[in-house]
Length: 65
Image (cartoon, rainbow, N blue to C red):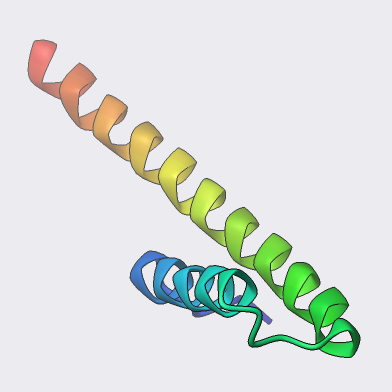
C-alpha cells in the first residue's frame, strides 16, 4: 500500500513533533514513537523532493531538445 501523506502534511506533522519536543510536551514513553514517526516523515519528504527534482529535470531536458 502506497503512503498517501503529502509533502505539506509531512512537514506540518514534523513541525508539530518538533514543537512538542521543544516544549517538553512529550513524555519519555512517547518520545521513541515520535522519533520513529519523524523518521518516516523525513523519508516521505526526501522521496518527494527527489521525485520532484527528477520530474523537473526531465521537463527541462525536454525543453532544451
